[in-house]
Amino acid sequence: MIIYTTEVEDINSFYRLESLKEVYGIIWMFVPILTLVLGITIGVLVIVWLEREISAGIQQRIGPEYAGPLGILQALADGTKLLFKENILPSRGNTRLFRIGPSIAVISILLSFSVIPFSSRLILADLNIGIFLWIAISSIAPVGLLMSGYGSNNKYSFLGGLRAAAQSISYEIPLTLCVLSISLLSNSSSTVDIVEAQSKYGVWGWNLWRQPIGFIVFLISSLAECERLPFDLPEAEEELVAGYQTEYSGIKFGLFYVASYLNLLLSSLFVTVLYLGGWNISIPYVFVPELFEINKMNGIFGTTIGIFITLAKTYLFLFISIATRWTLPRLRMDQLLNLGWKFLLPISLGNLLLTTSFQLLSL
Image (tube, rainbow, N blue to C red):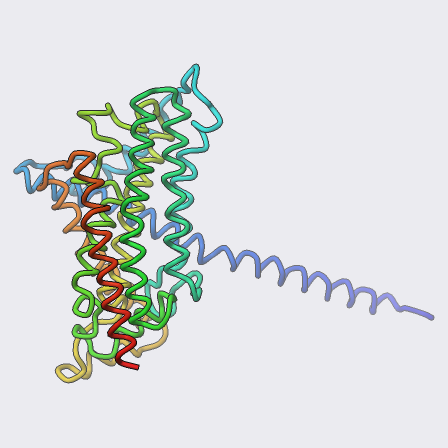
């Protein structure tokens, strides 16, 4: 059997072409992930700037104004400063747990962004169990905080870690029950399906009107999950120095800072998806049929409009969260746990039973 040189060259070029296609396929697989990470990073920088500007407005101060136009680069300057600071390890602490803790807190929150639909065509993973995957993954974050508190060999840090774990368990149950009610109404646990179920009647189709009690409970529980005032007991400066992050410095301290704002952005996005109609422009078809057609547009323009609407609703909720921080006083630890177990849990259970009853009657 004679194989000519030209045939061998053709076979080699074919294999090279196939291997190049595989390489391009792998690269294109990482493009949406990197795009999402870049968008999230910019979103966090904007939230930090917004928080400083809003808090300055509420307290009648000037706020950041020197780093960049209107002080917009202040968060970037702070991050750079933390990056170059010395990384100190506690001499008698558990260094392995001390190092792993901040990474677990950040990675678990970043993974949850994969099920967020920014528009009808822009979602990293449209899973059938999307919202429950978020609940499962986000419950890992307090484990990282507990590891950080224990690994620091500091009683204040350990108390802060224990408080974070107790607070997360207390408020995760009402939060899950509210999400379950939404899932029952939409007949799906996919985030995309939940948004689509709210798109029929514009603003009046939002789950906000169908689940007002659930919305209030979800709002309070998500603030507690983010450890924002008035629920920032794990890092209460007056009581615990700085809670689980007392012994941290440099980039590890910065990771806790980033995790806090990532969690706030994630909660706001889920409020938008579950209760505020997601990417839909939410104007009833009866009044403005031309604008309503924007929801059905395909391609880049429709996707861009969807992203803009989602982010507009998200940042509206963020404004409420930030204003709450600078308005309400901090609760005591016993008040925090009583609110979770004695009030929010029975209310969310009652809300779930009502929703189930209505769904059964409507069959």
